Image (cartoon, rainbow, N blue to C red; front, side, top):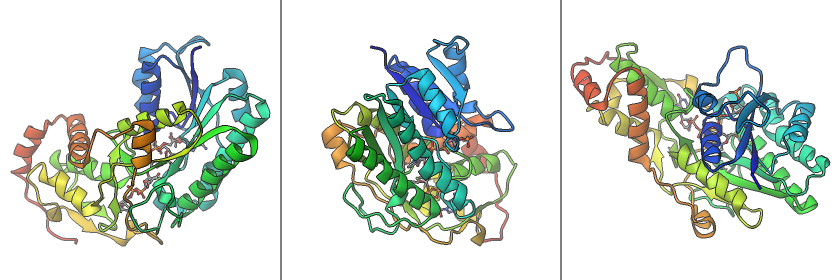
Length: 348
Ligand code: NAP
Ligand code: G4F
């Protein structure tokens, strides 16, 4: 039987990689997106070209629905009849969740409840549900963190993800649903949103090389993160839903670096000293911070056979090369240009 996957958040970073993966495996894929005042389907435009989306039975289609709108979720479930539901949609920015706490809780906590409840009420017994849980739930719990580590969230985003984690487990326990959590540590890519720290850095370096920017403004450089590649993590997400039983899994690389390390690595690829180009500002500091995340993914390795392929150095190079290429530079050409730069002093 052909598998039918519904992906919420399909126009996001992970949604785009997951759609590619599932289509390559022969799935029929339906994505949902909410209305925006300006089209923002750049991450999946290549899929529209590859898989004709005009007729109802097309392999890949995207329809409007919103995690804050129960009837839109019920309608798409009824019409599409998925065998697997991947809930990736979220207000995913931790810093911004301090400014938009109520809507973050609505989308990230009540949203998954609406979806789980709609699946349960539909009476479809065999639908498998994936919830995009986050290492941000561990918050202030010291590293390393695994499936048994207590949650101590440090942001409205973290709290919202803890609620969704337990709602997913509750539907498993109370109603026997196949509902699993992936507790994913930070994962990045050339498709990462521009206001997450890794992409902000690589994008800004490309702007500096192109002569469009002098300095980057950043907040806390001491934060430690376990950064992997989104393309590797969507393979883990898929494996979580193919497992014989519903369960919760950490996905991580098991390596931890500071934001400062990320700066050193990426600027270093061009022979530059990051301190010549970075200004520290309180503007990007958060009311509460998650100091250190380091994942122990041994359960996923043992049970699912999942391992990440891309590690820190490769990730930095992939992201920087992507942003340079978009401005017409190879790494080699950027190195040559970098040697001619005179940093503008001031700042940190
Ligand atoms: P992302 O690029 O921000 O994608 C999230 C998507 O959710 C966006 O396409 C967004 O649409 C959509 N969305 C937001 N509110 C919605 C709503 N009300 N209804 C429908 N769609 C909505 O995030 P990502 O990095 O791909 O992450 C995917 C998921 O994994 C998120 O749930 C995130 O919290 C979680 N997660 C991510 C990481 C990570 O390091 N990347 C780690 C752990 C967990 P718009 O484009 O319209 O805003
Ligand atoms: O890149 P970030 O915004 O990612 P953060 O907060 O770790 O959250 C990401 O990973 C979570 C998994 O742990 C996901 F659930 C979540 O959806 C998201 O994908 O910030 C990383 C660190 C933070 O400590 C932040 O304070 O970088 C620090 N930072 C320093 N300067 C900055 C900046 N972060 C941002 N976004 N922008 C800065 O200018």
